[in-house]
Length: 194
Image (tube, rainbow, N blue to C red; front, side, top):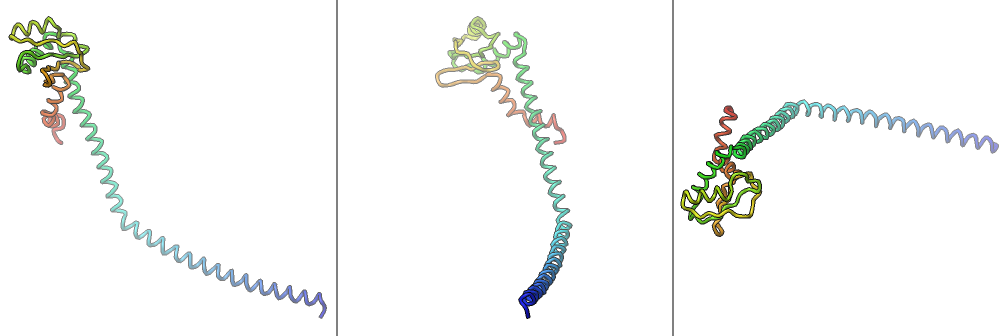
């Protein structure tokens, strides 16, 4: 046998062996693909079954979350509307005519005064309460209330101070007190079905 024949024989045997190895690899690949497809089908079937079982629960949960979100939006809108009612009240207190404003302040001051020698602080934007008005009040009721030079950042009304005691009769405080007291009634009137 010549060297060329031996080389040819080795190449033929190597090709045959390579073909066998490739054939086995193709068989293994096909088996793996079949097994994988069977597993994929099982997983898909299990997922579909699970989804079909859980679908009503998923939609029920979505419905609950949607209702909660709507409830939050409604509550926020109601809270804003209630706040607007009391903001309008504060604005009406600010916008009173001079006569109504001073008459209301007189009633408040008369009720808030304890000893008659308190100091009154008013808003930096106060237009109606002045020393002359306070002097007339003092003379009418026999008081000695003084008007402080210190002005406050309030919408209107006043603070009455005696030592460490302060009686807050500002419009903001009056509206806040009214809100705490009347909010339930306001809610019933604004939202009768609630």
